[in-house]
Each structure stands twice: as C-alpha cells, then as structure tokens.
Length: 604
Image (cartoon, rainbow, N blue to C red):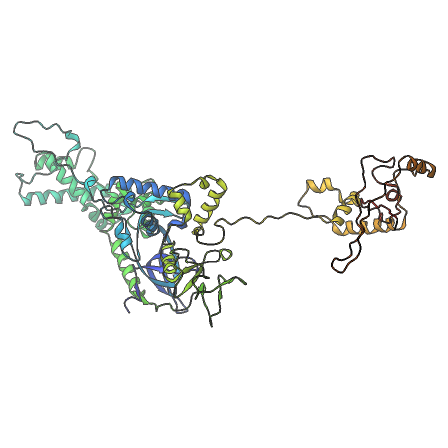
C-alpha cells in the first residue's frame, strides 16, 4: 500500500513510451482535473542519452575536475562495466516543469546531489538510485554547475592563524579585518541608550516628512514612523554613539546637522513598487536562487541588494499574506495519490502460443524459437539464451531482444548492463574506429541510445545503405531522340523542379510513330550498283562456315547446327554491315530501329 502511495516531493518513474526508458521526474504538485483525473506537475530530469555529445564532453570534463579535487574513489579505479553502468546513474537537473497524468507513474526512485565525500560505488550498490551535479537548460542547450552544492571538505575550512606572542606585531592587513562598531562596556546605562534611540526614530520620522519621495510612499504619519523604526535607523544611531565615544550631546548634534535631519533608508524604501512586483514574480519561479533572479528579472540590482531586500521583505505584511494564501491553496490540493501497480502487458513483449514461434518486433516471416536456446537469439545485454520472458528491443530490422532482467534495467536506467562494441572501442580504439564513416554511424547510434549489435549476433553491426539507380527504358531513350523539340533536355536540366509535360511528349511520339510506320526508310548512304557489288564479291569470296554434324543416338540428343563467327578483319566498302544487313533483306530494320547482327548462309 505504501509503495503505491505517491506524495509531493517524491522522485518517480514516468512511462511515455512502451519501448523507451522511463522518464525521471520529481512531483511538485498533484492537481485534480475537471474530468476527475489526477495530473502531476513535475520537475524534469534528463539522462546522458537526452543531451548532445558536446554537452556530454563538458560533463565528463567537470567530473574529472571533481575527481582530482576529491579524496574518494576515482573513476580510474573502476572496471569497464562499472564505468559503463555509472553513466546510467547520472542525471541532469532542469528548471523545466511539465504536467503528466498520474496514471503513467511506474514506481519510485531516489535522486540526490552528488556528494563529493561519498564513493561513487555507493550509487551502483543501491537500486533505483541516481545522482546529479549539473543543471541542464533544454531551451538554450547549456550545462551549469548547481549552486546548491554542499561545501564539505578541507577546501572550505577556515585557516586559523597561530596565536601571537607577547610583543609580536600583527602583520595582517588591518583594512581586511573586522571593524569594531559597539562597546558593551560603555559608560551609558541601558535607559540612556533607549532614550537616544527614541530620539533617532523621531528624527527619522521628521526627515521622511521633509523628503518628497518618502512622503509619497508613506503618506500617513503611521507609515513614516514605522519606516523610521526599521533596523537601518537603529544601526545608524548605535554607530553614531560609538564614533562619538558615547557622548550623548555630541551624538545628538550629529543626528541633526546644519543641512537638516539625517534620513536613513534601507532596501525596502529604495525599491519601487514595480521592482517589488518583479521580485515576487521571480521568487515564485526560481525560489531563493538569487543569481537567476538577478540575471533574468533584476539585472540592474546588485546581488547584495537583492539578498538584503529578501530578508527585509520576509518581515512585511506582504510576505505574511502570501504565505497564508499558499497555505490555503496547499490545503485545497492533493497531498498524495494512490496509483495501483501497472499490470498490462508491454507491446514489446514477445509472446508464444502452443509452442509456435512468435515474431520479433512484428516482422513478418522472421521468427525464432524461444524454447530452443540454440535456435533463439541471445540477449543483447547479458548474452543469456534462456529467460522466462523476452522483449523486442531496438530497430525492427535488427531483430534484437532482451531478457526480462535486462529489459527492466533498460527501462529504469536507459542503457544495457554490459558495454557494447561501441563502448569498448571508445575505451580501447581500434584501427576500424579510424574510419570516419564507421565512427559517424556509431556516434549516431550512441546519440539515439541504441548501441550497436554485439558480436554474437549473425547480422552485421553496421547497417548499410540501400543502393539504387534510375533505370531508363528503351522507349524513354527513343522518345528523347524523337521528341527533341518538345522535350528540350537542356532547358529541363536547368530547371529540375519544373515538371515535364508527359502528355505532350506522348502525343508527339504517337504522331511521329505513325509517320514512320507509313513512310519508307531513308538511308543516309546511296545504294551501290549491282555490277560493283558482284565485282567486289569476286575479289573477296566469302568463306564457308564449318558446320558441326553429329549422328543422332539414343544416349545423346541431336545437337543443333553451330555457326562460327565470321571474320571482320577486313571492312567492306559498304561499311561494317554486310550486304544483306545493309539492304534490309533480313527483315530486322523496322521503324528505324536496327539491330547489329550477322547472318551467314550455308548449304543444307
């Protein structure tokens, strides 16, 4: 019952995707919607897989600086597996808020600020434990050190000087030391000091009545007297008594010099109403992070002025009223909510029925036998071949799966238990890693949080790109020649985004095709007389081809007549083609399309 009860301030897992790791959030508010559902206003935490590689390098640099200054176990003493799993425990705090349905909560976890005095192994020994040391801004993509670090260790201890001997001079710079402003052993009694303080308040009230700006802010005598009774007036009166050696007559004369009464104002009176409203708005957004308040809301104010105003503002009625309003608002909101354990099956769960193999990642035709460890694929994290439940993991085309234990680790910590091939190459670079194409591919996979396949998988670790080419048909090539006037290839190449009018080209091609079908072919060369051809054949007699003849038998089938390729060493006067081909006697020249073939006649 207590495990399923979630309260404000708890660190919880949220599930926004069935295949991605859980989101880690801190509950700030629990609100009930108009439909009766419960929504949680949460603070976002980010994992290493959620930020860019450039920021990860900055985070690693910051971690090395902490290791050099700390006296605890450094990362160099850890094994490769511990280094790999330690990265899964690191988070980055953000100032971003979001609202999520409370029904998406999947359990509790623990997130703490990195303790420099504690060993990093303590985070690995505890389940559902994370740490953070940097603040991530998702809007501007920056990493900053958290201002709330606990300053523990020898670096933050005071250096106590040795005690001076009698007669030894103090060589310290006196201007940097503390200044004495009050002497408890004064000759004045407590009654005399209180009377002087009353005179100082009266002078302060009269000074505010004479000041135009103060009379506008405190129009009534009651408000002016209250402002004159603040600590700034009392501090000025005490300092005046000390500087004049507690001489009342001399101190009173200083309170009212020749120019008029002295007016002492603190930050509450110096700030305008608009500046006070900005401060309250910034305090609502950032809390007591005065650096962010000054940077985003009040850049013209000094950090000292903002801090001083804050502690004076806490003594006003305005602070008391806001505190009461927040208390009443908190009473109306939910303090806790009960979320039952989520028991629905995960869509990535690989199911089997009646011993039949189930498909991995929904791929049709690619199956495996979970009951048979020899035929089944091993777990991508621990390389186990047997598990009571398997889950599909990674891209569908890779057909990877995780066992039940590694799947729960993946959902909680956003990674695999064992270092993958890409992690090992980072620790010990190999010659293959020098290839920029392989390195860029692996970096893309690492950014997506999907490590490359381990060496036990049958497929390649790197997915190759599908090669393709544009295949042009013979009719397209012929249309380019026939329809040159309509197509205008040169102009079309200069404007690749302008579509080509296929209808006009097809119509012109049909017209030209009809013209070519009805008209005889035109030959570029003139036909030679028959006497010239007979004379040429007498000078160059044709050779008879050797015909292979075989007697038919029952064992071997009858072979067809084989033709030998004619000799083309000497070109004819008609060109490369012979007489029959040149005159179209073989019937292969149709519609202006001819094939280069050689016919040889032989006696039967």
